[in-house]
Image (cartoon, rainbow, N blue to C red; front, top):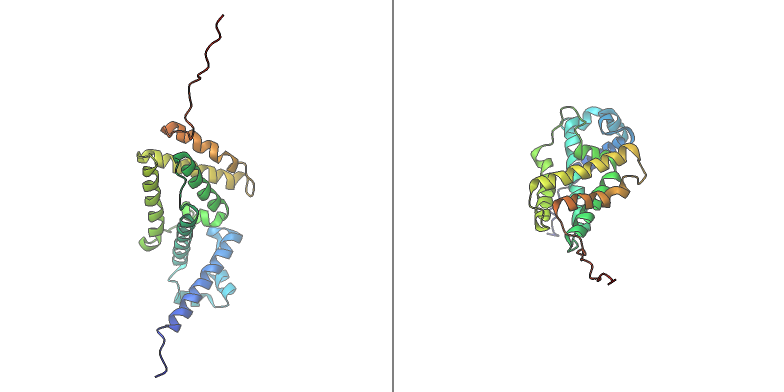
Length: 212
């Protein structure tokens, strides 16, 4: 016997076709918006008839579900590269976390919209597709706890602040940096309110007053 292979070529081809369909869906989402993609246009892009898509995805919502998982898995991998290791000082670490998420988000508005906005009627991610988002959130809570942010409300405020800046950037200055430039200042305002120390403690003046 010359040897055997454990490769399942049928499964590999099927997975490659699913990937091609998802890539076509992403291209459309970036051209016409997440809510504007159609099965007809996706099928035409990959060179098949629309009914053939159902051999790979049960519905249009199933395509959205796979795209949602794609998005959070991509961010999870991105975080592993960009935030390991974190700076040791809490303020530096939080600034970096904010910058990494902000830049990842504004780099692909369609992806960010699917990850964080409810713009698709009837769409709820399945538990399997939602799992990466849960892992990212849990990692964030754990990381902030290690940095001294132990009140979950403080973490929620930070997430809301960051999301608001991203939304403002995408809505009012797409491709620019108007709100990007405010990120560090906003992060420091939040850190000040939460009592997170500055890198250099403010020291009382040691200068003596001149005698008359």
